[in-house]
Image 1 (tube, rainbow, N blue to C red):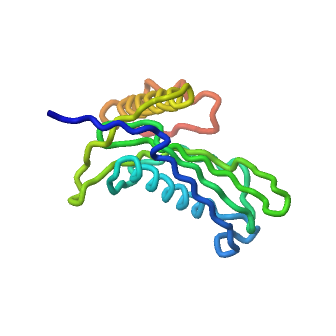
Image 2: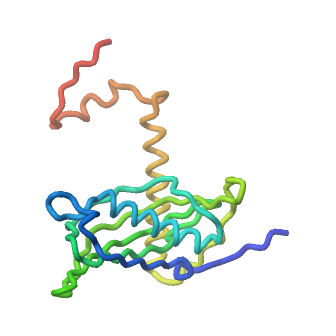
Length: 184
């Protein structure tokens, strides 16, 4: 008999805050996006590992839009928590805010979703606890993840080399900055 373990999203919550240093900036004094992505990956790892009680690896990263630049000297806070669980996978939502220390102004810089997979000591995927959904926000986030996974799977099938037929999409390119010169 398998005992199902349940945990809440709150059980996975991680908050990381870090001062942005000149060594992490570009020539404009803005923090490199790659550095922020690295921090986001750490936050996703921490939240997923905390929830699953296992070592976790990053399987994929959903779209990341950099909404506002982060300046040297600002405090960056990353809030991460599990939004969805599958068998061995989890979707971790991450919100990134920066704060100007002098003015106190806080700006939202980006949000993203990292798909993480729990692994055992031999590198095999392992079952994660089931998720307790306790409010409307958590329900919305869980359902958003389901829809995203479904759309990703459908897109992968539709555009696989096996299924893709050029002539079915020729008219879809009308109005785009492209010219087809595909030789038969």
